[in-house]
Image 1 (tube, rainbow, N blue to C red):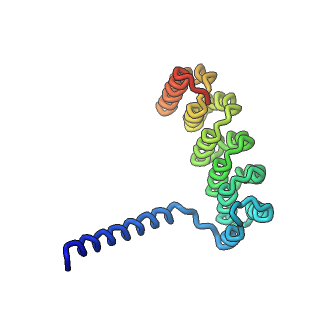
Image 2: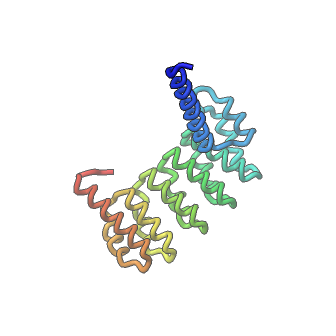
Image 3: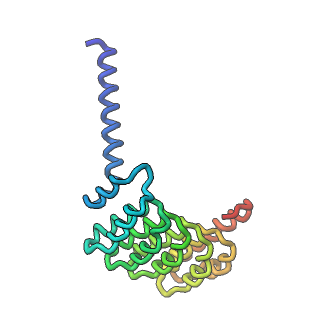
Length: 213
């Protein structure tokens, strides 16, 4: 076998290996929806704003199965249909933590500011993961109307809520939060102090550059 043939063969093997690896990575990141929801997804045309499909997915938010509820929420989030926001907000208090988290992901995907009050309320949930995810969603959506509530949250008795509030305020970048964040520099919890310090630095840097969010 010629040397060139060997090199070509090796190159093909490497290329096939890379394609297999990329495809595997993609599959690992994809959410596998239950079969019944996959059927709904398969019925969609180029865009998914088909009222019938949306309504069926919204109905599945009340399914007895937590898996179906959660994945219906994710499917609605993928569609980006703002009309699904009220139904998703109703599921923020789902009895299943995984469902709550998937609902939060969906609301973040849709990005509608009407979801912010419900997400801020979820920042007080009993489950720390739900609280943190809700804070990240508020930060992603970027609605400054949440700032007063977040400032009050800096005084909450739960240190994780205080830390989360500082983290979200950093993302919102509102300078009116600086006095409250400055007070939080004296917090008894080191993580709250660290989050407050980071938030102040980020807001002041943004202001010095004349940026507005």
